[in-house]
Image (cartoon, rainbow, N blue to C red):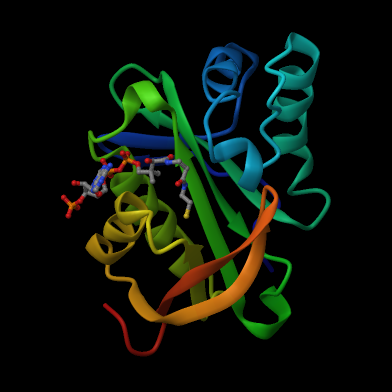
Length: 182
Ligand SMILES: CC(C)(COP(=O)(O)OP(=O)(O)OC[C@H]1O[C@@H](n2cnc3c(N)ncnc32)[C@H](O)[C@@H]1OP(=O)(O)O)[C@@H](O)C(=O)NCCC(=O)NCCS
């Protein structure tokens, strides 16, 4: 059985924890990002009501059976710097998916790589997870470098995989699998 609560995962320099009302400023800060509102439910309005609804939705993911949505926090200050999820809708087949974002002011400091390493270690501590996958556009070098740094392997290019805004986009699929990878 998958855990019925969101754990707190200490993995310096980051901590993965539940979102809290004090994290609203981070969500506001990414409302105008060119990509994040297109691939997540972060509201492009940035309005207080929409941001509060976003924070509440993150707590609904687990009881709804969708998975685990973590705030990525700086381990030293506990300030939220981003979000990472473990999505489990295909867990009956042994598959889980991850995705993540980091606020613009906090990028290029290793937060995505550290958060993905923390999430990956925890996910493979769950016997149900046999394969962990993520999808990333070819231009998004920061994201696929973070994945490769953690040991994910690029398996191929999925053509026209997903609508992002007005266009369908190709995506690399990356994975880590329990039997073969470190
Ligand atoms: C992609 C994203 C999560 C990266 O977050 P980050 O905290 O800046 O990433 P890190 O600092 O951990 O860097 C990861 C790797 O990418 C490299 N990198 C960081 N920014 C880069 C950039 N703009 N161009 C190329 N490489 C970059 C880093 O040097 C590091 O490589 P290394 O491990 O080989 O040294 C962040 O840019 C983001 O949130 N973008 C918008 C949302 C998004 O793209 N989400 C992922 C969807 S698949």
